[in-house]
Image (cartoon, rainbow, N blue to C red):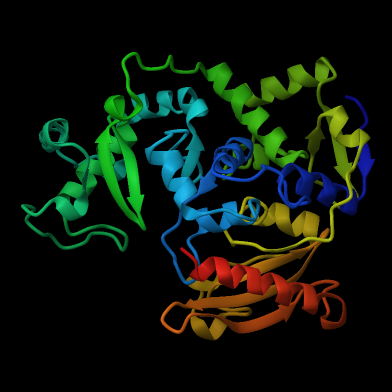
Amino acid sequence: MKKPVEISQAAARRIWLHAQRLNTRTPFGDGPEATRRAVEHLGYVQIDTINVIERCHHHILFSRIPDYRRSDLIAAQSADKSVFEYWTHALSYVPTRDLPFYLPAMKQHLAEPSQWYANADPAELAKVMRRIRKEGPISIREVDDDELQEKDHLWASRKPTKKVLQLGFYNGQLAISQRQGMLKSYELMDRHFGWPPRPRPATGRQIAEHLLDRALRSQGLISASSVMYPKLRFSPEVLASVEGRMRRKLLVPVRVEGDETAYWAEPATLEALPEPLPLTHILSPFDPLIIQRRRTERLFGYDHVFEAYVPREKRKFGYFTLPVLVGNDIVAALDLKTDRAAGKLLIQAWHWIGIGNAGQHKAAIEEELGRFERFQLGE
């Protein structure tokens, strides 16, 4: 096996920051089209319900698009239909161009629903689909003839129809055609996208190549766990793709100083290591740079813990802590909350991380906090 190329921690960070497009101010340009370009480059943008500050899908895009507007994502989903929602490692916005890679999972779920939806009644789904076909998209709020039931899970609904709608969604029969906050409207997938014909589902080999390409594009420096997240190892198909590219000299093994993880990169990625601009980003805890916690700890020396699920007395940084990136380093962790009634962003705790210090970093962070507050309270 070829000897790995040795690089420093700082070089690894530069590669990842460049791949994540956090090292330049407007990497995707301006205007509504920037949202489509950002989602296509990143491969997915995670959705989450917590709104202590702005919901994470808007926050992630704001971090890469300075003039981002929430209406741009709404238009991309509902008007342009250049993005759609489906499950990656979590519910996410995904580029519509990648839809063929998700069709096999939808088909599999239709044949063998996951345990959570195993008791959903297919006859009820057929009934709901007939209603949608006749009346158009519906949200759970518009279903007023349900017999309410006790929740069997913290995130469940008392309306049985919600589970039926979600079953149709994961089956690929229904698409989420619009969101208002976290209220979803469901439409027949074929009608939403203007089918038939449906795209041809990707093969297993094509899906493996897609996963590898997506990681190389958005991470630059990849490992088995970063490609397969949240799984820790390559699938046989992806491993075969990695080995094939190494034989063709399209990938080279990489070793990062002080890290025993096996990494790979494309040769061109290692030839020019761009220095980041001295930009400041207040990142979502669900940002692609942060969500893979082990990777963030190894390359940035910052061990992020999502403390919303930690008892108050055991929290170290706060309920909803946001890492702060300045240039090439994570230098602070801020526990923030948006008080929309008072029209202000509240700093509940400020912690310095690593080389972070008030003399060198506080002014830049405070300036970015002002921009972030204006975004939080805008539109």
